[in-house]
Amino acid sequence: MRSKLYLSRIPPQYRFAHRFTFYLHDYLADVVIHGEGSEIFDYEFDGRGLALDEIDRDDPLNWLLANGFEKEAGEIALRQCFVALLSDSCHHIYESLVNMEKSKFNVALTLLRKPIKDNLFYFEWFLAEPGELLSRFLSQEVKTYDVSRMEPADKKRILDKAQALCGSTEYLAQDQLYGFRYDRKSSFGLSRFCDQAIHLVTNNANYETERQNFNMIFRGSEIPSWKFDLVYSTLPLILMHTVDVVQALLSRITQVKEEEAAFHALRRSVGFALFAYSVSEDAMVASSNPESGRLCLEEDPEVSCDNCGNHLLSSVRSALYFFYHGVLRCTKCCSSRYFADRPPFGYCELADSELTEFLDEL
Ligand SMILES: [Zn+2]
Image 1 (tube, rainbow, N blue to C red):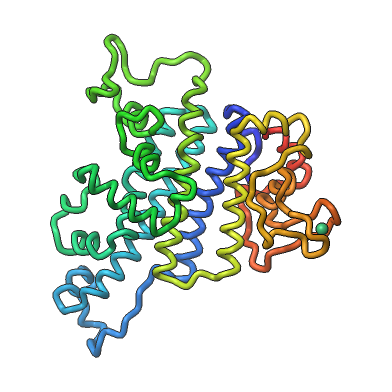
Image 2 (image 1 turned 30 degrees about the horizontal axis):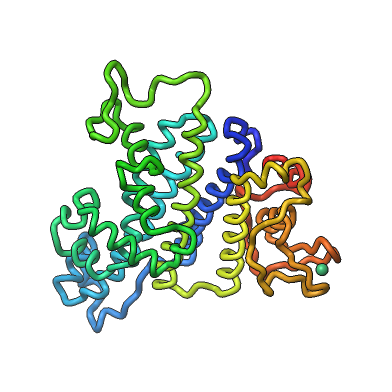
């Protein structure tokens, strides 16, 4: 668990957004750690009568391709690319968020560029058109699967397909997903700012460096609020979408436990509702009277109290308690409902005393 001190440089209205973003990162990192531990990225096949020592261990993929094992080569490449891209993505996102906590804004944006523009795109491509990407990756020149050479229309097609398959259109419009990551003209997107953070001088017509200036290095003592607005109005949504894409890919290579998936889905929904609430004006009201906070979660019989029928996630306090402890607690009759396979919480876990204190951040 990270101390609240780490958040002192992030404006109060964005602290929950930051925690929620970190939680989404932690979920992705868990996929790598637990996935590797349970060997879900390994692929086994019987070899169709071939002795194992016939395989060229220095170059197994090309050996498989040359010996009629195209399907197996694809399955292995998909799993190995998936876990390597995800691990790399998590390393960058983690460091980016830590740099946000330290007010090293340009470093944070520099580190975000690759996971949101490149790594995520390959997850989307693997989900939307796996055969096409694997064919290019295994048998064609590198430039054929280079995302930086891809036309905007092709990128949009793949993003649209991936969103349709993972269901993220529920909270993220198609043009937003592209605009946040690739549209250099977009004033609400990260693309131009990531580019400006990396390059001291930019020539792009949409964000040409001004005379007698370098990009984004001269600043006063405080980071302007629009920079926080920019990151926390886009990044949580992009990472929600990343989780959905990663989950959709996971379900293609392994059996996901139903109870565990239901718990994670509910926790993410609750976290997302809290995030939306925390950056809204309603949060200002709640900070003076936390119990008055009401969350816009859909009425769902699954989260009603078994004992008295009370809706268990209608108040900000009960939703926060579930988000941080994984326990549904009824404020009316005081009974609690636990999930059987509740995973450890890591970064996001808060002690009871901190939870009350934390309400002030909303
Ligand atoms: Zn109850």
